[in-house]
Image (cartoon, rainbow, N blue to C red):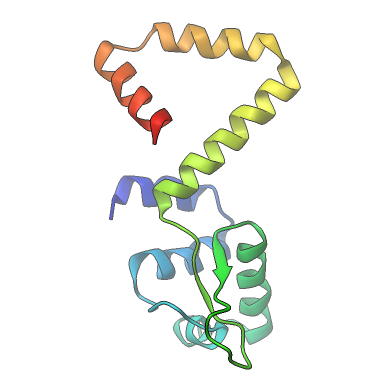
Length: 130
């Protein structure tokens, strides 16, 4: 796992969301999992607090409900890696900036691109293509 991506991804989440996603992304909780699995790792928290936070993570697209396992409790799994989350979050943020500032935001992006080295530009192109 890319520790740098994990650290950046967790910084975008709230404290409890980050604790839960660290458990999921690090493999400390096996997948698929139920809320009780998370609560066992965070026993100082009320079950309902963990349940609500897990549901919010699913609503945000970081977790997905696994419908392939018919159980009484909802079964969850990660919707992607920290890199996947960072890609989606950065694209969403860029879209919000363009929506808010229009062409001025695009000009700022262009100015930043011109400051990059050829290697950095290639890395950026590779990321954009993925």
